[in-house]
Image (cartoon, rainbow, N blue to C red; front, side, top):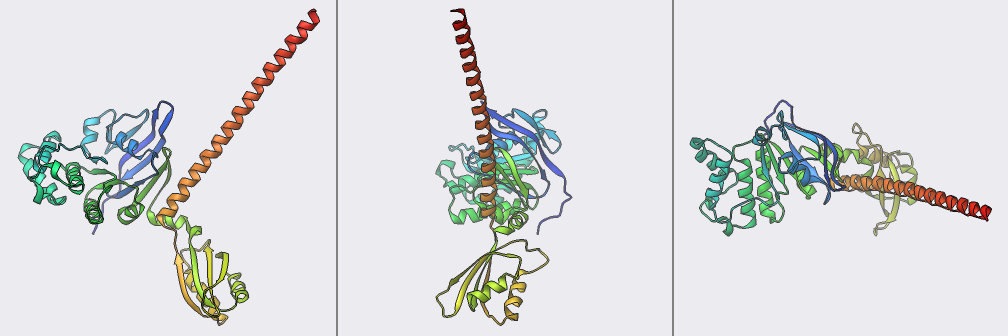
Length: 364
């Protein structure tokens, strides 16, 4: 069971910008991370996730903006800020000619863990990442899954308050993915975890809160449940009903939450397959009861009823599609404005030419 902690802002990102020669990888990004939660950091390829993480951890500098970590500015007080973070990049930085134990001892020294505590700290993280059986093996001889575990143990070493994991399950087999997810949940009991992933089911399964960015901008920040609830209009129902199409449509016309009704033959005699989109269904009312009683009052039996809820994948696709659409509209407006300015310049040049021509004719 998760330990209850008083919520406080552990990380604050303010007006963050990263400009690569005219390309904004991060575009005036603002968000906060509360203590004691697991955060999912989502976005399509090139959205700016890894760039943002690298700025937060101090790997790269920002063009503009500030990042505060546990009260320390990453730019003005980098040593204290970095002390609060454990970071697992997508490709863990490991020395393949070292054994697992040597790598973690070396990392403990770099993290300035007191010499008297290093042995105990290294043993703790090896137990957490399930590495004790391979502690004496060279890293070059480990599978990708075990290398990922070494990287995770290295990030957790010293048990900083914030653990940042960039695509921790990429390239792992299903068993390894489940093991890493279990470890992330365990870390979430005592740490704030930020998890970047392309696997939306993974985020939905382990995260308390989701941040979605696209083209360097924050487009959503909420719990997975609330994001799915916001997409209620993407939910729908599928029914098998014994009755005539006219009767079915007449009944559904009395239910305002049922939209875009489609009635088809089901393959069974006198049974219709009915699908429709749900809209405006409040949390306080169960739409299934409303539909059941509406058809029962008309003595039409419902043979099956299934609610299709919007998944996190659908929310993600809808939000990023909206962002692309807005960008597309902005680009179109910019192109229209550029065309107008170009046409105005051409008209001005043509007017000047005509004036010069007129002046020349007058002189002749």
